[in-house]
Length: 175
Image (tube, rainbow, N blue to C red):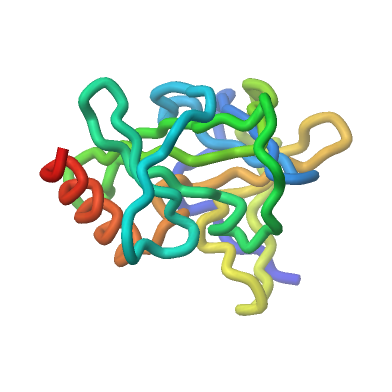
């Protein structure tokens, strides 16, 4: 099994912080610098003709924020919403431009803030096209579990992200 290099950030030095959250039995992590806020689940306005993983939009203090159901995006089965279900609001900084997008991701529960030394982050295993791992930066150990570290900029494809921005703009225009 060959391993590919971690491509978003050089994790070779220092300690990195990740907000970890659960989707089913798996733990995922997003760099803490991308997190804007964690919000309890609330009413979301659905968008017509949106992809199945797009729940809709939310008006967050005057900003229209697209909301993504990470369970659906990752092909996981639906579950009932619980009191632990939250929306993690993230700032996504585009690499190609100096622009920033705000999006919300529905997750089963927020777990913890994980501090990981750079050399404790393992590269994503190469699965030879069997599974899309382009949005995974690496794996970190937390106790007995592995945490899947997401490249938040790559969770949505460029086309998906562009359609989300357009849908949010249209929703803001209607309001």
